[in-house]
Picture 1: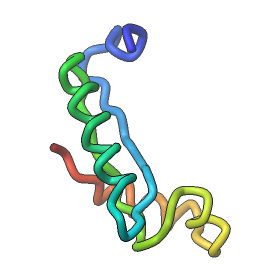
Picture 2: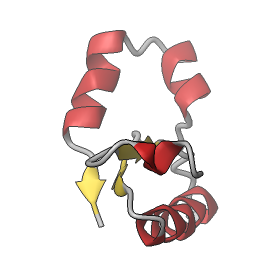
Picture 3: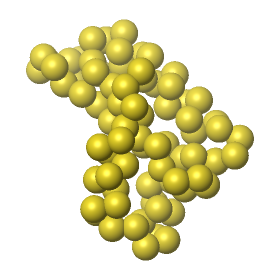
Picture 4: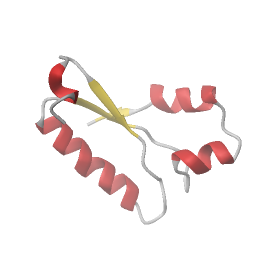
Amino acid sequence: MTQLCETQDRCVYIAFDNDENQAGQQAAHRMARLLEGAGLGVRIVQLPHRQDPNSYFAAGATATDFTVCFQRAQQL
């Protein structure tokens, strides 16, 4: 994590699964709090319901689709 913090104003994007049990989103929020505590900016990428980055692309998503998700990423 130290290397991530070497550059000021660095922002990390987290893209975990978006399953019904919300385990991925809960883990993303825990990680975000740790990264923020280290002085990093953090945004959480919301993927479509029941998708993780791999299944999202396997289902036919394009780089443009993923870019839209990044642009909509939420800051804590």
